[in-house]
Image (cartoon, rainbow, N blue to C red; front, side, top):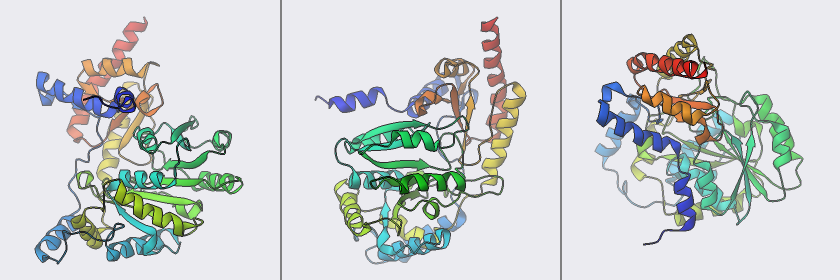
Length: 393
């Protein structure tokens, strides 16, 4: 059976994250799992909050009628009302249940909104480095990704964004806290972006992908994108904040400030159906009705951030501590990050090259690993750095 040329090309450029994860599985078989230090996959290593598991038990035990059946495509009305209430509290905006669409994770939400707004050849600006799947989400719906570099500090560069806008620009994807960099975009930058978009001669939607919104360190919080940028669609999930990536439960929310959102509401309800999701998992909608404000304890990730970053800095690496997410995005000691990843792999340490996110010369490490593994991995990091120094002599 022949497969499409588009998919053939995409497979060739597919995610470095998965590629390195599969390499890790092979190495564990060869060396033993205890001798491989795998920092590749952002798969939460903590259990969901007790409130979530208790809510799951209650929902299953209750035997509610139609708990496993179809509901309106956007989701159970009571759940959408609860999400709208939460967003009203968080943003100060008058979200309504009709603005909410329960989705198969934040990835599902991204695809629903992109399908709803893109015609073939329409452009979507994506800030680099970025979550590698965005390129595929956009091409899924015949759009064209327009990469725009962030600054050396990984913050959006308003002038570069302005230069990238064309009459075909339909949307900009923001991801803050950011995967892979861990940067939290400050309110001042978001306000500047809103001012830029307000001056454009056509509507440009900001798609705010927010699965890490509640994973922010040092007692800080993520400024509310929808409160600061008028034309915003929020894509969110509980995958990271509640350690539930395998349950695929999230939502899409259209800001009350989006113009002509009545038509966009209808489009999103329709695309949620025709993309094959039909509706978000019924059982987990009912669980979130009781537990949507619960989050994992971020102090564990913060402690591992400090352990890894401080240890790598002491070993001689150039490392910037992330402000949020559960990733460290550090400079590689040589410009060829892929070559350095191979050096690390010889020492049993696995990370994802920055090239996989659109920024060569960097390496992403996931903090979703045991603290003891971090400690045991540091000699491997040090040995790789020594190999670089020896090769340069």
